[in-house]
Amino acid sequence: MRGYIENRTVCLAEFIIDNKSTVRAAAKKFGISKSTVHKDVTERLKWINRSLYDEVRTILNENKEVRHIRGGLATKKKYSGNKKSVVIKEVL
Image (cartoon, rainbow, N blue to C red; front, side, top):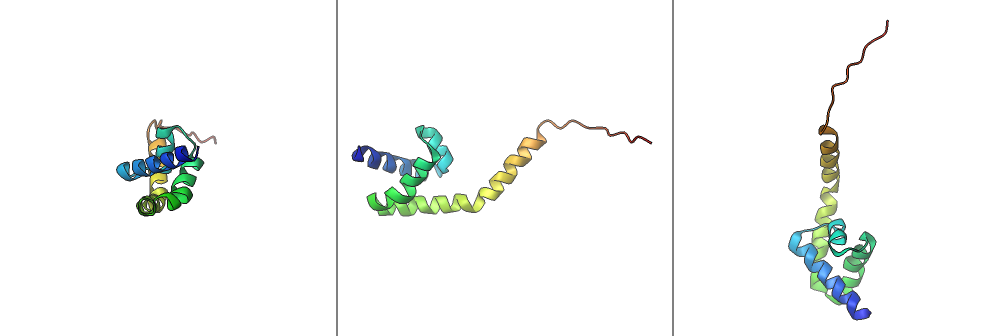
């Protein structure tokens, strides 16, 4: 089992580096939870391959810096899709 976890950790790290991916995207691609991906690439990878860990850490830090922008764009996209004009009549 230990070899499987180490192999998965390295594969996740390579995927994140190659695609400049988020933890969420990596989890979806590999069919595992976000918390498992996060634990693999932030804790386990440090002891398996330090240089790979440093590269992944750089990408994860970049993702963290722009997450508020991505969230704003997602919200904008969500609400700009089907706008219906609403007419409000005042009752006198």
